[in-house]
Length: 184
Image (tube, rainbow, N blue to C red; front, side):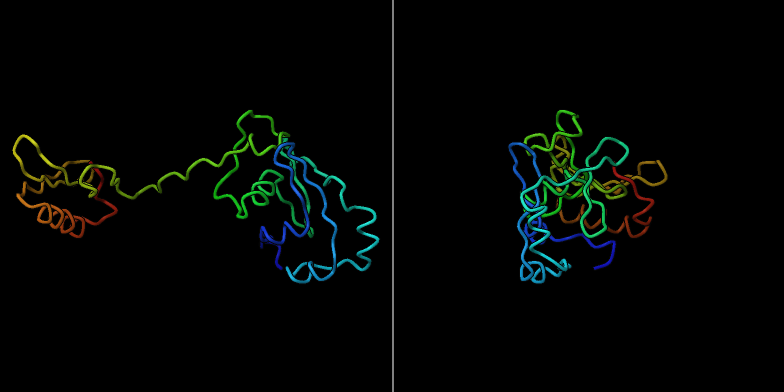
């Protein structure tokens, strides 16, 4: 396992327990077979490790900004991300945000993962037609196609059929280049 690899949520479950109501992370009782099954290092004396650590709270440190961190196999993990992965069975996409801004509050009710923003540079397609630059002109009963190029609006025409307006828009994107063509 390289230092950039994240443990799988299943491997985390072999190592830790999480109580979503209190936010407590604790060490789980270990056995060599379970650790080996997940590709994890097996301590020389598993029973001695269990006697000392099993059931104890995970020692959390501060990342310098007030967020709790823990070390697993010499790699730092943010406690909120670990708790999310343990509860949901998958690593969160993006950052885990805290509802009450208390960085030490690890309860699941305090965590949320905001939706990912739309990547920049891609045209919006949340209009009624579903195609950027193509819309229905109710007053004339036609489909209008247009494109933005270098900050200027270029009218591509009005069409009786939707597919003709979409075709005109696609041809204009190819002609002007998708990177230059803006949304309207």
